[in-house]
Every structure is written in structure tokens, then in C-alpha cells.
Length: 550
Image (cartoon, rainbow, N blue to C red; front, side):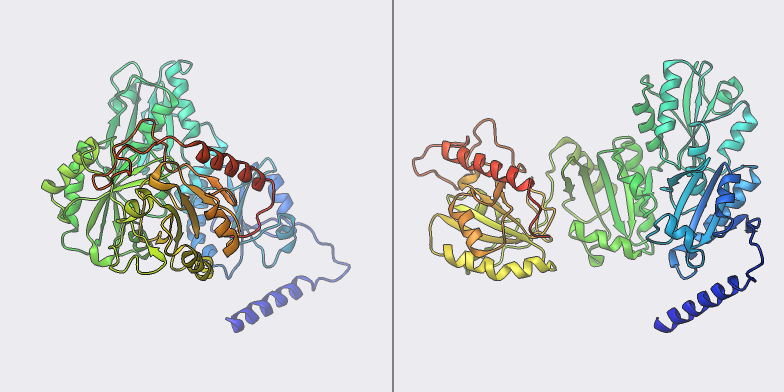
């Protein structure tokens, strides 16, 4: 690596010497940019002139040694070639930032490739994808109308071209409320989803639109044409139709379409994990396809090829591994969390999958939560080992105050905290009013409680009578003991993963209150005081800089 770097440095020095070898009396002029594979080659000398001469120009700042730049190069050149063939005035350019340092300093570049778009000299950061199609789509969106005008059938066919999906709207009067909704949807659409607008009845006939106005998705997969069949022509409704129509019944996950898949077009998604090399793969996808057609618009069906290394990492989120696939799960996307469901058996047949989907939809199948098995010696030490399966019994439905740390085995801050946490456990060991526990939050989940960082510490009042209090103080013994002994007053703030019930809930069958009456579910005056003080502490803490990084 060091020798490669020295070689590169030597080349840069030689180039610098070469460019500096002009005689002092020789005047430098900005030469016309060289064109290589339809891409303008910019330098410090001709950069400003190129920006001035081209109304719309996309510039890639690159380094010869940059792997991402090398991967982008063929796609970038393909996009430049396509734009030239279409007669577009948009130009693509590149500048070697390791040689032409003035431009790098001028734009304070922090990495390669950095891509910037200049329209009439005004700079915009490029935010599109790294394929030729996504580059062209991004540029088209920013240099033209939201929807391409389609005056006749030939223009419509050219627009559709080799696009995997194209949205065509037929509106004889473009000033109507329906047409405005279509144009607003087009304006807000993702860069890779293009809209065409026509008032031609011939175009409408060509693509099966039989009403006085309408919308059709023209696709290269599944059904070639999908008609918009709703009466609601708001931009939101049209956008939902367009996004859903842009995906096949069963879509294979990739990094390129991840944002599209998890954009929330449907709240529930059916996930299949399996190797494409497996002899059962095609038959499994056929089962999914049958169900996807039945639940179109209600549930998105996604496959994850576990032959891909990036997809293997996702398995852990669902408690799966390469040895436990093929497998299926259903997820439900929520504002703060994601609910997961799994079938009772691992069979992937219509007889298993159909009732599984119906059970999730009608609520008869409850969400599944990851949990390790309860260790035989879970309570042998002062700090109790809590897992998903014993969390409610030990932490929630318990007459003791509970202090629990959620950790990750790989977390350095967690490892540093553990000796202190053991001391906290020893302090309360043998007392009948407190329990101290710890849970591996990477292997166990708790309904309604989302752990977003490690370590996270919560304090729970007895019998789950109130929402827990999150500890935000120093990770030191004295501070933790003051927090626990004070009922969560010092160093904590209320959190809201568990809603306080509006009416009493029945106690678990194996629990009996001492006075044989239901325990109060509303906060007592003392608990209200604790929460009020914690909220005040949290407000004060927000005004001070964080003392410790996670």
C-alpha cells in the first residue's frame, strides 16, 4: 500500500513538473476541454469557462486511485453517450482532483467521487444514483418539466422506450383538478420514475385508457399495463399508485432499490430469505407470486438472496442465519418500531403461507419477538440475566423496583460499564424492594420498547404501574445508586414506550396482590412527583452540552 502511494505521489509530482515547465514568458490560455467518451475533461484552467458555456453541466470530481470512481466511470460515460444521442444540451464532465487542486479547494471537497450539478452557473449537490439510467433521470427531472409532453403515439413510444416502468397521464384539459394532481405527483416522484402527459386520444387508445381522462403504468414486467382505477386524483393517491406500479409483484432486494422498498408504500411486507442457487427457490417464489397477486396493494413481497454477503447481515435482525434459510417473515412498519411475525412452521407452501398471511391481517397471529432461552442460572448472581421470555415476569409484573441495562456484546461502553453494574447488583443483593438485571438487546426484544443505543438503562416502578424512566446520568456507581434509591429522580427522564392504560387491565393469572385487590394503574402522587422531577431534570440537561458520548 505504501509503495503504491509513493508511486502515485511520484506521478503527481512529475505531472506537476510537466505542467509547470512552460516558459515564464509563455501566456496560458484556457484551452477547449478535451472530450473522452462523450465526457468533457476539465482542468483548473478551463473549469470556469466550461461552466459558463454550458447551461446545464454535471461535474464529477474524481481521483485515479478511487475505487468508487472507477466503478462509476462506465455508467457515467454511458449516461453522457445517451444524452448526446438524444440531442440533449446537458453535458457531463470530470475533473481529476489530485492534479487540479484549485477546484478541490474552491468547493471544499471531502471525498471522491463528489458530483456537482451547475445550472446557469448555480451549484447543486448531486443526490441521484450511480447508474446511467439514474443519472439521466436525475438530470431530466431538474432540467425539464415534471412530465414529458407526448403529442402523439410515436412520442409516447419513444418516451416509454426501454424504461422498466413509465407513467402516462391522459388529460384533454391540463387545467383540471385531476391533471394538476397528476403534475404535482410527477414533480414529487423519485428520480427514476418518469411521467408523460398527453391530450391525444390516439395515445390514450394505444395504452388502453377508455375514459375521458386516466392514468396508466406501462411496464416491462408482470402485466404490461396497469390502469389507475380510483376516483381520487390527489397527488398523494396518484403517487402511491405510481410507486406500487413501479415494483413487480415479487421484488428482489438490492441496495439500489432499498429506499423504494422501505418507502412505506405498504405498511406490511412479506420477506423471503433464501439462496437463488437452491433447487427450491423457483417453486418458493411461485408460491409468493400467487399470494402477491391476491394481496396487491396491501402487502409488498420481497426476496433476499442470501448468496449476497450484504443480505446475510440482514438475517440477524430476524434471528436467522445461513443455516436457517429458506425462511419467511412478515413485517409491519410503524412510526417508532417494526413489528415482526413468523409462521409456526418453516414450510414454504401455499397451505402454510396463505393462512399465515391471513392470520397476520386479521390479528389472530401476534408479533414475534426475539428471545434467548431462559438460562438455568439466570438469577444466581446479584445481576439477573434477563431475556425476552422472562422480561415481563421479572421486570414488569414484579413487586420490586427494577433497574435494567440493555447492552450489546460488542459494545465497548457496555463492557466498561459491566464492573460498575455488578457493584450496583451487589448493593441491592438480598433486598426485597429492588431487582437489578441486564439484557442482551441484540438477541432479545421487548414489545413496545425500542433500544436505539447501547448501553441503555431503564428504571421500572413495581408491577408496571407507570412508564419507565430512562437513565441519562453518569455511568458511575454513586450516580446510579442515587438514581435507583431515589425512584428515578436524579439522572433520569420519563420515556414513553409503554402507554399508561386508560382503564385497569387484569393481572396475570399467577399474580395476586397482597390485599387481593387490583393494584392501581394510575400514577400515585409520589410517582407523579418522581416523573415531574425527572422531566425537569431532562429539560435542564438539554440546555447543557452532553458530557459523554455513546
